[in-house]
Length: 198
Image 1 (cartoon, rainbow, N blue to C red):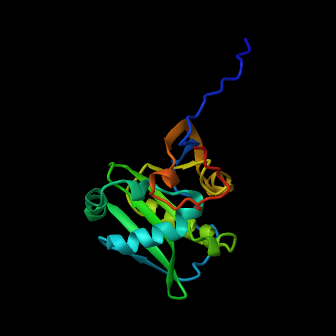
Image 2: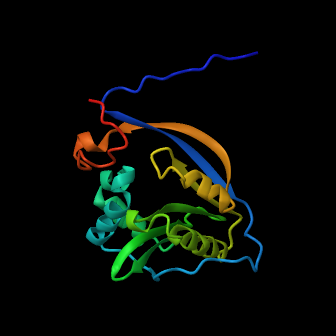
Image 3: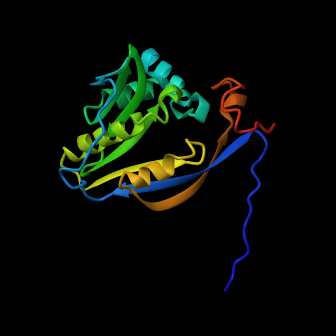
């Protein structure tokens, strides 16, 4: 039986995104080609929040990243102080241009909690090299599952990128949130490709 399409009205002042969850249930085969990193990837233990949020904004403002900007700093500090949560930064020519965060707090699995490359480095192979490293780091630990979620506010090629990297989609949901440009979390000119509806 055919079901009619359903539309949900999104109130003014809100943004909506379709979130797709993906997982990888086994490590890729050994010996596959991996891309070299174009800079120095370093683990940042208990990162300074001002540094972290500066890099986060640099990478994510054009994509309307706001979750880390909307939570209390004490919550971020608590996350970053957990030994099972790791933050990596990729430094290219003296500036941190990418973030990679791996969350091992749930036994037997790893979440790719944040993964992003600055706009200046998108399309230059940096994401591929960083993903190769993320997969290597995740499966170096005793896990049975590596997972990530992405949404329609992310880079338009993000979902296909994760699938090409070996992740398989298993769940989808709709997320509705206050537009961070109207709450003051992000500047009004952020992400002009997503119109503000007041």
